[in-house]
Figure 1 (cartoon, helix red, strand yellow):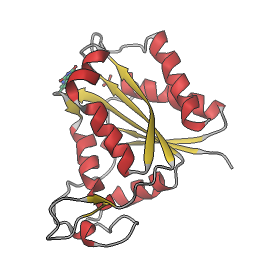
Figure 2 (cartoon, rainbow, N blue to C red):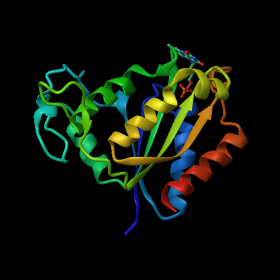
Figure 3 (cartoon, rainbow, N blue to C red):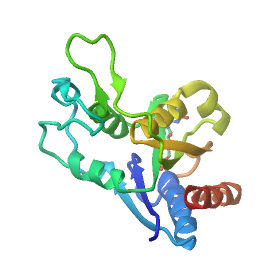
Length: 199
Ligand SMILES: Cc1cc2nc3c(=O)[nH]c(=O)nc-3n(C[C@H](O)[C@H](O)[C@H](O)COP(=O)(O)O)c2cc1C
């Protein structure tokens, strides 16, 4: 059976840096026989977590049910059926985009945190999926790694989704032109990561 790869895209512009980097990763995964799909968070109905903590009260290793009626359950069902995931976001004001952050906060359902307990516990420490993280910024790539904490945040997010991060693609100097092409070096690295996700 072919491996399933799902990309979660927190960028706002289709066909630009984040999107084209994801294209390359998915193309390489497809060449290795994977079945791929992408979810643009901006196109989905995702409400803000209201901190009602209903989902965190429920015991067990399965995610808690959220009372909000939007697209999150469908997205999470798809991710749970995937063998590998990509978490991709531009860095805006020093962190992931607002739409990616909204998605991340809704992952509280993967924590057990009943009233009376000081801090949340992950429901499971299982990491049977692989993840690749993609970040882009106006600043040089090294700055994303050293100064923003975005890479750590998305690694933690991958962990909540049951995935072990096997690569981080940090794309710097990504805001020089309105329509910027992916440099060949980055394209090659993206392809390498696509193969790593499914090999
Ligand atoms: C509102 C906003 C805030 C931004 N903040 C930062 C920032 O703090 N640091 C940085 O290096 N780039 C920043 N950028 C540049 C974006 O990271 C860059 O345009 C993006 O990575 C390009 O991705 P895209 O081509 O997929 O849209 C910002 C851009 C916008 C629109």
